[in-house]
Length: 409
Ligand code: 7TS
Image (cartoon, rainbow, N blue to C red; front, side):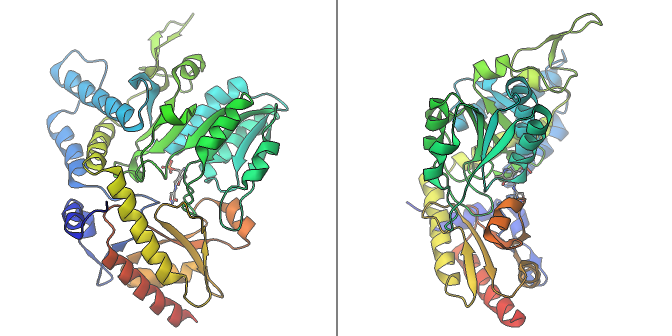
């Protein structure tokens, strides 16, 4: 069941930023893979917290400190339910996906990766799921292996069995590609990784706002995502990890909150999740992330998925026949992301002309340079949808694209 146009209108009313003109035209915001806009409930949560509650958490004996702690921990429980983790201690708050991946690389990674070991990534990873592993591999003398990507923008599945071997200690892949929109068959890879004794991290930055995530069902070891791509504030993120792994990992950043006791002779560390949350976190942001989870859960996943895939189908049908246009990522399993190029035209020029018509898209390499090298192009134009995107906006985008191409040819 999809969301009715009337319901989309009432959803849009919750997003003040959408109701403005850009360059004299109604804003058509199609850069949701970079960051989603925020509903009033999230904005008001931030405002309300600073107006009524602001205090530091976990340490104060006073009323406001207690209130702030309860609200902060309440979001941890909401996130636990949201991804179906066993317990809220398995939810660590970070500043985003990048921070979460670096945390795993610098703790689990430094403890478990040795010279000669292999880390398996895919050719469609975001730089933040490549560079932390390269830094680790360089330090340890380990090597990076890569799952190749097909012309359709899918993993070359038949290569996986030969890439996984006794030396593979970690697999780190995204659930959904930010550059292509491909939904990757992570469940199969998780099983295969475990069969050879490797751990597996899922970069869920582009999936958590678009379909249900169940970490117990997936049985992944780690899962990372950002608050700002799921209608929540920037500067918030999550690392999920299985309890036994988190407990065995050394702490990363040292400071307040992450300790049990400190002396110059010996410092002992706090329990999880606090062991990994040194210093004052983005308290207001985490509380507002709870409001973002509530916003998503007011809808059903089947409604969100049906709406976003209708938009994808609609936009794909209309643009794929345009002269010289090539869509990158043509898998049957995709979220609402269309990446494309037009022969003889630089993506940046299309993006600039679309912007002049009020249409916000992203152009460039989208932090996936190895992927574009594989396709032999410098990057793409990317339109990405959210639950508030309408069919009318797709029409405006298509018309603006047609006009831009005819001006540039
Ligand atoms: N992983 C994936 C799959 C992503 O899409 C991104 C951000 C990240 C990791 C990093 O997330 P951060 O919140 O820590 O920055 N992707 C994009 C994008 O596609 N355009 O801008 C940011």
